[in-house]
Image (cartoon, one colour):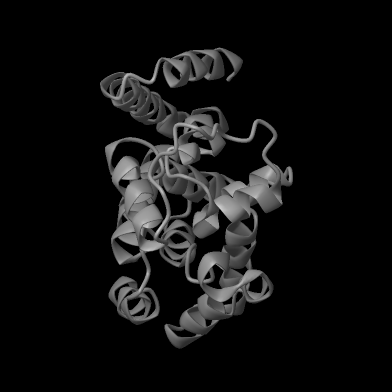
Length: 226
C-alpha cells in the first residue's frame, strides 16, 4: 500500500516546491518513528502522514482543499475502508498551521503524531532550505532589512505569506520559531528543542554577518515573548 500511495503522490506533487514527495517521505518516516514510541495505530499514521499534503490549499485552492478529494481518491484506489478514510480525513482536516491560527488542533493520538511530524519537518536545517527554496520558487525576496514581520498574524496574512508575498526570513517569525510550543507528543519534544535552537543559531549568524543590529535585537525581543 505504501508504494502505491507514493506512486500516486509522485504524479500529484511532481511540480511542488518544499511540499513535494521528499517532504512527504520525511514526514512519513518521522511519524512512523513517533507512532512506535507512542503506541499509536501505525496504518492510520501511515495514511495520514503520506496524504497530509495531497490537498494542500497552496496547490488546489482553499475550497478544494477542504474537500480532500485527492486524499479520498487515492485511498479508494488502494482499497482503504470507508471507516479508515473518515479517520484519516479527520486527522488531515485538523492539522496544519492555518488551523492552529483558527484554534483547531488534532484530537487523537494519531493526529497529534502526524501533526508533530509535519511541524518537525518545518524546523531545523532542512526547514531553512525549504523556506528559501519556496521563496525562490515564488520569485519572492529572501530578506528585506527594511520590513519587519507583522506582529499580529491572522489566517489571511499567513496565507499571503505562504503565497510568497513576504520575505523568506519573515517565515521564521510568522511560524517556524513558534512550532516548538505547538508540539503535542512527548516523543517529539526533545527533537523539537534541538531543531528550534539550530534555527536561532542560523538567524543570529545570518543577521550578524549582515551587520543587522536591529534585526538581532528584534530576534532577542521576539524570543523573550515566545
